[in-house]
Structure formats: structure tokens, C-alpha cells
Image (cartoon, rainbow, N blue to C red; front, side, top):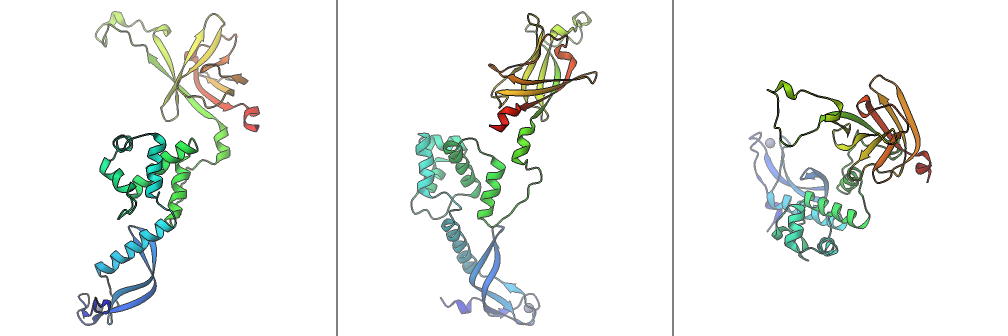
Length: 291
Ligand SMILES: [Zn+2]
């Protein structure tokens, strides 16, 4: 097909000029929102008003060039790499599809050696995250995504990106009184007799600022200690410096405290009780951060 005859028609914009097929060097355009420069592009330009027109076969050609350049820059995992991630996990296509929330057909298409098009960018990023997590360990997802975007020619500034040194500043926790659920009674709001709210009936839940529960505050009567019983993988450090604040504004601190089976002794031989504490800050022990 003679590409020079792609256009050559009366301009619909101005109705006066003719849209002429024009060869443009280093034509800057966008493919799916990402910047792309076509070495040589054929576009229609009106010889009167300058309006630009595009032919679908030409834009399809740019798209193919764009994807080829992405594959060259390894912006996508290759079919082999995608299959490798699944193999390393020891999963069938069905199970891998169920793991990442897509169809078996999608996985099959991505792993095909001569695939016609790459996976969606979202899918590619997700498989890459799985791979990174599998091979390297915990991933800083935001940094990862920003680096990946650079491969597509996009530089994104994320305002709230925490500098690595700030991660040592520790974590601020807030307490929340939670009435202990008794098994038999539903909500006894109509029964005044049930209103015997005493401290024993409450749990003091400890949460991060975004509201995830990381443990509970307890008082060990035997040793007269105030204890934070952490749950899950919290905290990420083995020895801590702590600071905590009582409801009356008094501050306390402790240093070089070991975390043993999730138990963090905030204060020994103390009259302080869990419900008196309002805010707790935990930091990795200074020694630990220097290692
Ligand atoms: Zn025109």
C-alpha cells in the first residue's frame, strides 16, 4: 500500500485546505499516555490551517514500535521470566492465576514464547513484585513502582515517600479502650444492671496511627510491670527504646528493651496501669540501628 496516499482529502476542520500526507522526523507522541518518539512518522497536515490527522494503520505501527522498544528495555518480564516466577513458586497456571487474581488463559498468553502483545502493565508489575519478593525479600513497593515507571519514560514525584533514614525514627502507637466481649450477653444496652464498667472488663488495644492493631497493653501484677503484648510480626526490631505518655501528660522512657516472644516490658515496678497510657513511641535501639 502506498503510504503517501494515506491522506489527501479536503480538511474537515477549515474546509479550505487539503490534508496532505507528511513525513515527520522524530515525531513526539504519546502511546497509552506514555511518551514515545517515532523516528519517522506519516501524518496528515492541512496545508491551510495546519490541523493534524492520523491514520489508524500508522498509529498501530507506532504502538508496535513502542512495545518493541519496551521489550528491548526489558520494561516487561519476558515470557520465560514470567513462567520462571510461577515455577519458582511451584504453582500450576490455575493456582498462579488464582493467586494474583487473573485467569489461567491470561497466564498462558503471557508465558507464550512468541506472544502477540505483552501483559497489561498492572499485571506485569504484580508479577514483578511477586518475583522481587520471592528472590530478594521484602519490597519497598512505592520505590519499586517509581523505578518501573522510569522505564516507561515517566518520572513521578511522590510527596510522602519516606526517606530510608526516617524509617529508624520509629513508630507511634495510640491506645484504645475496648470493652471485653463477654460470650453470653449480646449488647446489654437496655440493662442498667449490666453497667458495671470497671477496668477489668476492658482491654487496652494498641494501634498504629492508621488504625492497625499491633498489640495490647497489660499489667503483670506478679512483677508489677507494664507490658505491651505485640501481635504478628510487630515490632520489626529486637531491641527497643521506648517512650510513652500517660493521659495526664507525664512522659516515661526506657532503653535497650528486649522483645521476647512479642512481649515488651515498657516499665518495671510501676504503678502505671494500661488504661493510663495514651501514646507509645517505639524505636529500634540505637545499637541496633548502627549495626
Ligand atoms: Zn485545514
